[in-house]
Length: 341
Image 1 (cartoon, one colour):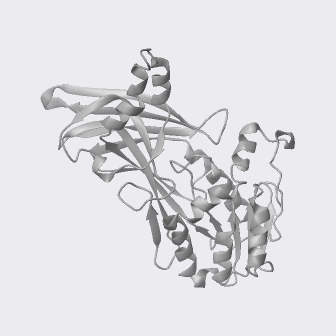
Image 2 (image 1 turned 30 degrees about the vertical axis):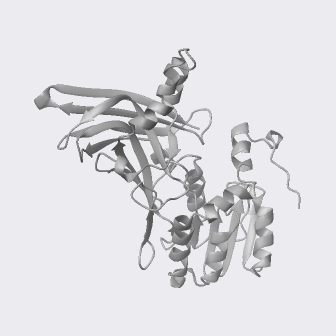
Image 3 (image 1 turned 90 degrees about the horizontal axis):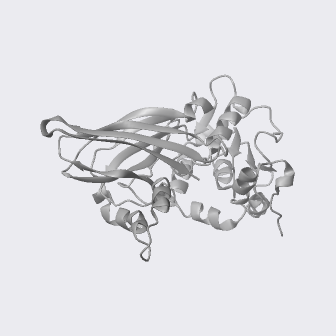
């Protein structure tokens, strides 16, 4: 069956059209389904807690191919409503039918904020909303809107997952920084410094070897999906990174951990360099300076993040940092700004 892409004529800005169209193709869903850390964590949190899902009405926000919806039905849900704006939902309906669940799963194509659900409230919201650096693409806004509009109001409604924490650490990555950033110093004999400055403002989504981590990690922010608001998604918070070994710091690396705390036995997974690969990888922020650090010291600073003013699905991120060694009279500090788009 052929599917049509969204167009800007449907009263959506270009950025929104691009976002939803990016999920039309099966390839991106294949990558997510093959991410075993992601998919098995959701499966285990649902299958191992059938007592929570039995006879419940479940809302799957951004259902994609409906894998989470089908997990919920297998766990005994009375009915599941899956909502997705992208045309992958056409294939999702075929998948649901092929698995004999059409009577248990209702799939609606449209924006969560605009569709009309067949139930006035739901018992459980499930969603795989996380983006790079946790907040890229701003799908959490939609989950919070669905929580406020549809989750039962007696305090017994559940959200899967319900906690997310962003971590930060310092890494030694001189070789790659020279390759990525230093390349612009001499491009076939020409000075490309203007593009070097641009490269420094673009975070790199990639896997980081655990051996490159120079500091202890710091939990910068934890979001509780039962209580947080969209205002909490714009923040400016301190961090402190104790130095593990004498080395250099060329960049800071960020990742996130996810928790399903409603489970009888909590299910958690991490996207950090210390654990198994996920499709989210890690997010690397190269510093303008190279920090020389020694065991016993620390790097302090502030991580700021907010949705971009022109495109709310992009992120404006700033990092202020300071490494202060009084006994050697060395102070290094700086301010870097990044755009994640």
